[in-house]
Image (cartoon, rainbow, N blue to C red; front, side):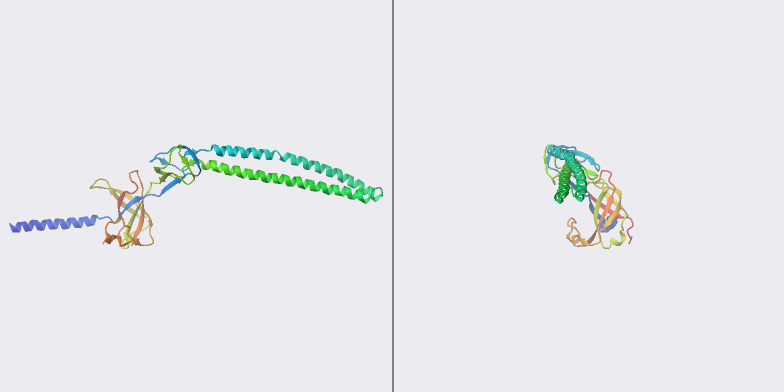
Length: 302
């Protein structure tokens, strides 16, 4: 009886040892969690949100129009500046007319100057008369220069108004809520008829395809891992089964670091490891924070 019990115990010990060995063989090379680059999209203008057509989980494309912030004040300001610019523009022909008058007067004085010079040479005109005609020419030249200077000042004023109009146009453009990157809406922070201010987040978005799986490997594993290597990714299908996916190594850290505190045991946390990022195509089932295991397909066998 005792010998029978010993045989049974020995058999269970062998099975336990084989099971433990198999468990060790089934251990994955690395563990980690899925991540994604999350971007908070903020308002670029202040005012009431008139429209914001998004919901959490929506798939957005680059340049997609989502809504707008009230632009009533900006539109009124633009109309005012446009009217001022037109009023100034209407003054320009008056300057041209004044210059034309002075130039015509100058032509008349030129003819008088020629006549008085001839009369002076014949002794029929005095030096003072000749000097007076020359002085009239100089006065007309100065008057033409003044009018041209005034016209240039008007052009400068128009240019200033045009710059202000461009600034208002830019503010109106920033009042449009346009999605800048492709991805999935993770969180919606604002709704229509709420007040927006520049820098206030309206929603958070992330590109979830592909997903980033960040794992940590030891220095012993590092020689067997290379950029663009294909790897096997395991995620939980059920409590006892895994689903197998294929990923690609996109980055490998150049510097060793202490294992993050999310690792359970203190002994493992004090080990130096290298961070590896793996890109995994997402069919919609992969979520941020989901745990996964990795097997490097080209690992060196012992």
